[in-house]
Length: 185
Image 1 (tube, one colour):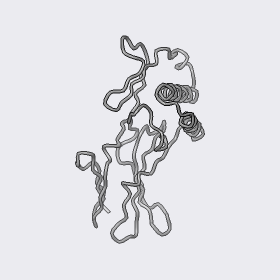
Image 2: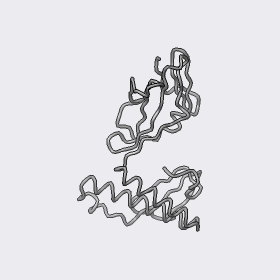
Image 3: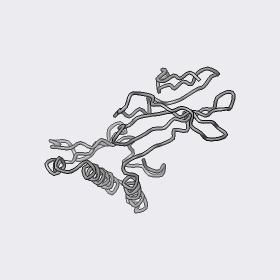
Image 4: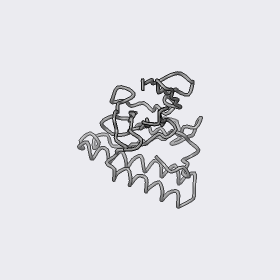
């Protein structure tokens, strides 16, 4: 996940496609999604590697794609350096990321607990979301659970869009205002 000051080709998502691209351009941007074709990816080498080396090969490939797009569309060397720093941090964290989604965090009416929501990205759970119910004063986690069955591999940033809390329930809504998760307090 890039810092807010980095924008890659005016896109909210980047899709990397492996294999022949036919008559398609090597990369394009349609409706806020940049598609990038990697035709020369060596699948034979990839499948001969152990899991750790595969992950590093994919990370390196993703980084190269993002850098190529950025170099074609932006001339600011600082942004290119920041992208490389992000890739290094991902590698340092063993391709694990846990992001607290603060807009979904709520405090119970009695002010005793705080419910935090986390977006987890790693090889064990894919992209999964969990909650932690925490004593506010001691910061002790009293309950935690996944919002959906794991592993999950879908981008659910629009699925878990906003939250509200009442005296009895904590509820998460999607971008269409439909309930996607409900928990009794």
